[in-house]
Length: 259
Image (tube, rainbow, N blue to C red; front, top):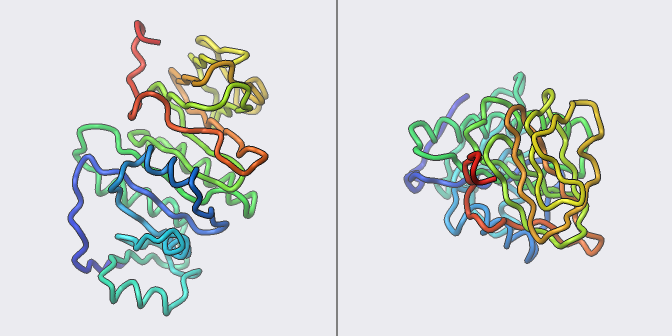
């Protein structure tokens, strides 16, 4: 990859990152903006993933960096961003990685030595090609990014990557959600605040055990002792996000006495 750095603001830790993904765009709204602020705070690093940079601009955000092979980025837009001092990281068009992978790898390179998990939000995940969605979910769950706290906003749902740390998510009582194991079985799964709670159970990849649960409390708490899950909370019929960040502003370590 070639890189051009043009005097952007210095990165500070703990940093949070908002990645505007290419493909189907998520329109800004009060619920999406509120979720973004709750997850990433007021001053995240803004990353445009190829044509996703156009989405960032629609949100009124000038990216700190744009990453990709730029096959879906208008040349005039790329030139404008460069002239404005935006860092560009260009990859070859003929490559094995998706642009989302490249962006996550860039975040990982910026986070070396971080004393705590790095929080990342991907904006734009679903609503396009199904193969892109399946691949993106696999990428987000990759062991390469196990030190990230990852969430994603799609047009159809809000997504969270669940590992061993306890994830607390608020939602209206009666909200439908699913826990889907990715990349293999997930064991010692706990899910509290649900109509069908889970306590130290195994969710098998390829099985439907975690599909279509509902919340029985204003907040659910989810974790996995081993493996990785995706918590999927569909957007409501009114188009609003059903999910918001729970009581803790960050993940809490899953200790035996504080389930």
